[in-house]
Each structure stands twice: as structure tokens, then as C-alpha cells.
Length: 436
Image (tube, rainbow, N blue to C red; front, side, top):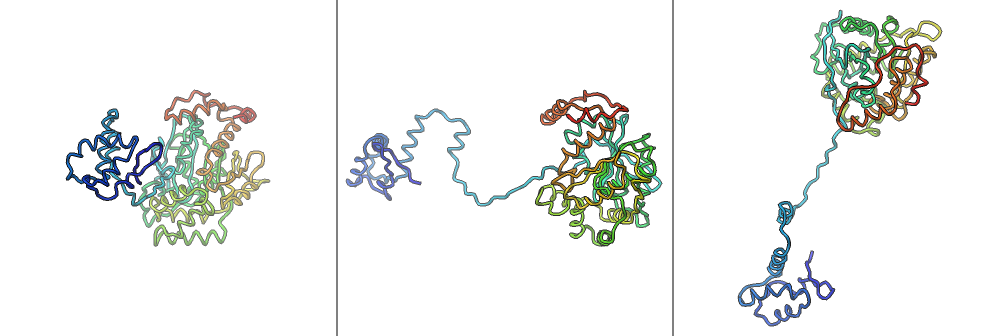
């Protein structure tokens, strides 16, 4: 870029006047300089007053401009440290750009949950307790390849925090599926699905719980449904996501057997990883949420014990049919049956819904999602809140109170819950809750 001076309203480049190195004792060069009139001559005058006496000094375009800039800087007000640093900066050449895309969040157990070991007839299991134990209980049960940490983002969602001040959540982990679990012994016989459901009795006895609200996903939903069939008096309500009520078909059995064999012999292979992603998200999860899909892929690769997962997969693929029918034996507790429109288990939830009593069950399909807890937490939290209000567990939360919780969450503050305490009523308050 050429620098220039104003000459009577026109722009004259100095490079056109001073090309190369010139000696001031040449009359032709001095005439060129003296013929620069107007503002340019005034700026150059101090320079010539100081340097014309030394006829042997070599003048260049840079030396003239440096003298002019020095004179101009002396007239400017004093600069602060930042401005001085900017003026003294050298040119920087941009050679490389590296893009980093941080994920929206990472798996973390820092959700206020306390991990407790509970002894059962088939070994110890880990239960993470979140909330005040004196309040009504919510039991969660996870799906294949996950543990209680998968529920943390949902239960820490701002709308759920406004509700869960009235409950205590007990996150139950299947044997050997908790974070950092060592490999189970080779002679360990993994519990069946019915035996996994029976372990809930030991959890209830350990914490002194008489009844609970179940919240399960996938294999965990099937376990909670089995427990509700055997112990209907201990289950007040069920919120089940992607629940399967029948036994495994031949295609599922073949895939799961190959996955189980690969996990035991070679660990987390690419084939098993792809199947787990399909099991949770359906097809093409990267197109919907690339960061979320990459986070789960990294989690399955690094944080899952392959041997223990293979045992749970074997138990799930050998599951028996629930044996329920709408006109005979069925689940007595109210059921909220949820699936995603892009989930591979949507048809299984339709079959399960057809075997439930329509008077105490609700089927929901959430659009544009496969793993609804991660992709649509707002819709699930609203449905779960209205479901509990319909069963008489909490007083309806007004929209103003929910907005207040959101604002406090955005500001990074928390306040004690001021809304009504937990109540158990006989009338259905769903008509009052629809405005929430």
C-alpha cells in the first residue's frame, strides 16, 4: 500500500516523487521536492531545514516519512499503554487456523447425588440419591450402555428443578454398570430381568420406602414394568420411555448376541458402537445434533466396561414377555408411555400401549427426536410434570413460578422453593394444570 499526501484536494503518492535513493545535491531532485505545494510542502519543510545542510546524507522515502510521522506524533495527545502497544506491533503472518468445536456439555456426576451401595441377594448395586429422603421417591433405571449419569442433565434441567424440590430421586444402576465399575468375576451369574426387578425390593428396604414413582428408559423401563406387575401396591405411577413389552425377535436376538460376543472378546468394536448409537438415537443422529452424537460415541468408547455390558445385554435379549393384555392382567399403576418419532422402538411402544388399560395410560410420540431425554428435555419435563399433577402428587406450578426458576438459573443463583408443599389429593387437578 502506498502512502500519500494531500495536494490541493488531490492525492499524490510520494512513491511517484521519490523512486529509489536520491541525493539532495541534485538540482532536478530538489526541484521535484520544492514543487510539491500545499500541505505537503509545509509537512516537508522541517525536514529540509534540518537536513539540507548535510548534502552527503542519503534521503529515501522511508526516512522522509519517518520524520513526518515523528513530528505528527509529537503534536498528538499522550497515548495509553494499550494504544502504544498497538502502534509498536509488528506485522503478523497468519499461517494456520485450527477450529475447535466444544460440545454443549459433558457427562458429569456432579448433580448433587450421593452414591450409596445397597446389598442384594445378587451382590451389591450402586444407588445415587438426589434430594431430600423424607420426600416422595422417584426410582430411575437406565438403558443399555448407560448408567444413572445419563439422567443427570434431564433432572438438572431448569423446569425439572422447579418440580423436583418436592421429590427425592433414587438412580438405580444395574450390577457392574456404574461409572468406573471393575469387571465382574468370571463365575458371576448375571441376574435375569425378573431378578433385576426384584432387586428394587432391597433398595426400598434399605431406604425405608413404601412406594415410588418409576422413571425408566429402554431396558430400565422393562425392569420397572416387571416390578409393577408383581408388586402393584408399591408402584404409584410409571413414566416409561421406549418400553418393550414382548420378548426379543430373531433379528434383535442375532444382533445382540454378536454384540455380546464382540464385547467379551474384543471390547468396544465399531460394530457394537454403531448398534448402541442406533439403539439410542435411531438413524443419522449426526445430522440432527453432531455434538451430542460425538459425545455419546466418546462415552461408549471410553467409559463403558465391555465385559459388564455384555452380561447386561445377554440378560436383556433373554427377556420374557410381560404377559399383559388389555382385557385381563395388566399394569394397574398409571403409565405415561413415551417414545420419539425417530426412535427405532416406536413400534414397540405402540404394541405396549395396546396392552395397557386406556383409562390409566397415555401414549406420547415426541417429534424430531430419537433420544427424547437429550433432544427434547423441555417437552418431556412438561409432560412428566402434568402427569404427576394429574395423579395428585404436586400442586400445580403457575407459569410465573416456572419463569422465576428459569431466570434464577440464567443468573446462576438458586433460591429455596416457595411453592406449595407435596400434597396427595383425591380429585384430579389436571384441569387446573393445563394453563401451566
